[in-house]
Amino acid sequence: MWKLSKLTLFIIICTMSVSAGISIIFINWDVFESGKGVLKELMQPVLFILLGLYFLFPYVKRLKEESSSE
Image (cartoon, rainbow, N blue to C red; front, top):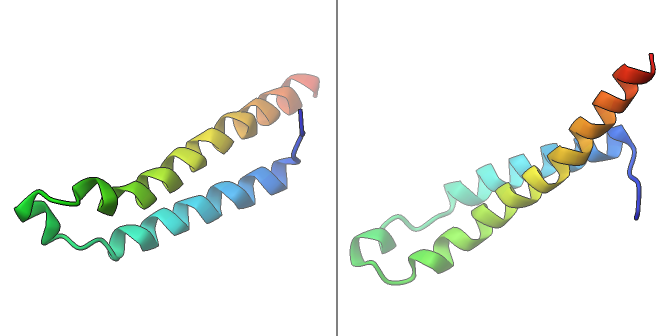
């Protein structure tokens, strides 16, 4: 498995969070009234949020390993 450093994981988490926030801004909210294309509008922000959470768990694991070794 590919082991990333704490700094790299933190940068990836921050990038995913900012990307999710920016993509939420550009959602066409009028689609929700018609009910068509809701999944297509929400797919990108949800993807960024899930990727941020995916990288959050190894980051927390690294922090715990570092604090236990000290």
